[in-house]
Length: 123
Image (cartoon, rainbow, N blue to C red; front, side):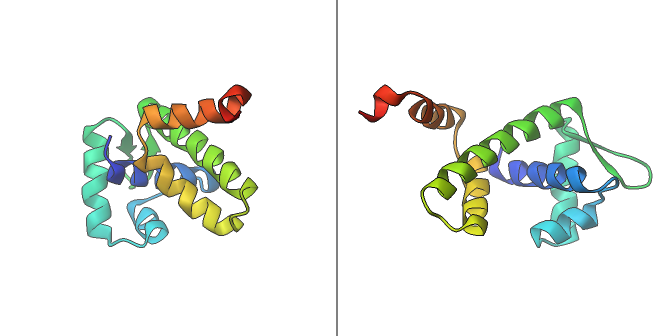
């Protein structure tokens, strides 16, 4: 999945956690993008079966969308904690954790997790 789609998927996920109803304009505001660019990305997400759009414009994550956004959330939490423990200021740690989360391959993320959980690697 592309970095762009990951960014939008994560935004929908975060907004759905906070609000009952999320529309394209909410995603645009959250990301600081134009509604036109958001509409294009949301169309791609519909085509990839990541979201559904209700007749009133409310965005819903599909099961696939929930699974993928949940994986992104796990990554964000992991890197946010790692960066915070390293002394990075909390809001910067969150911004960087989000960037890492959708830029990094699954193999690289698993390697980071392994480093974090296997004490023998750090010796």
